[in-house]
Each structure stands twice: as structure tokens, then as C-alpha cells.
Amino acid sequence: MPEERRFTLTKQERICSRSITEKLFNSGKAHSMVAFPLRMVYMDLEKGEQESQASILVSVSKRFFKQAVKRNRVKRQIREAYRKNKYILLDQLASQQERRVAIAFIWLDNKLHDTAHVERKMQQLLQRLCDLH
Image (cartoon, rainbow, N blue to C red; front, side):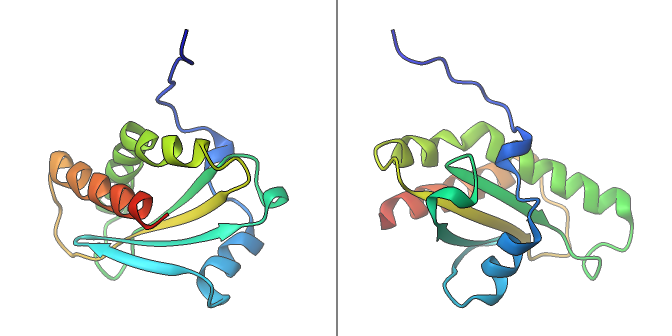
């Protein structure tokens, strides 16, 4: 019987480590792709650096949304879109047991978008990441 999928986003799947965040943005080893209004910055990590195969960070700039309510709404939409579609990426990574990836999702627009639109863009980004490897 196949393993049951749990569409959750656990603490292990979030980037909390300052060192991983700094590597992601400052090391020069990270790659980036855009599906407007989302930008995805990603890099492969060594095996011991994190527990889960893929972990994420979500960023929405105060420059785009001055009100925290709007920033939090966008972050919730991004996390929800990832949670529902993460198996596009995790199925690909399952065949490569040693591979770990850190991903940052960055919001690039000063307008709110509906959740379905954000989810479509998330699917595009995750599929493009899988196609690279």
C-alpha cells in the first residue's frame, strides 16, 4: 500500500536557521526563477544541514504592503499554495535520497492576487524546479 500523503507544513519544513538563510542569499550558490508575482530562490544543501528534503522561507516586503494584515494574507496564500503542491517537488526528491533543497519564496508585486492565481504560479515554479534536475 502506498505511503499516505499528509498535506501539512511542519516546523522541519520551514527555514528557521540564520546560517541557512544567509547561505541562501549571500553564498552565490543559489539560483532564482520568477513566475510573477512570485520569485523563488533555491539552493541544494548538504545532507546534515536540515531534516526534511525541502524547506521553505516566505518573504513579503513592507515596501509593497505597509499594512501587516495584507503582508500576512499574502504569506498565508504562499504557504497554503506550497502546502497543497509540495508533492510536485517531494516526489522528484524522493528518488534522490541524498538531495536537500532550501527554497525562499519572495513576493514581487504591490497588488493582492486571488489564491487560485498564487497557487497556479506556485505549481509553475515547483514544476520548473523539478524539470531542472
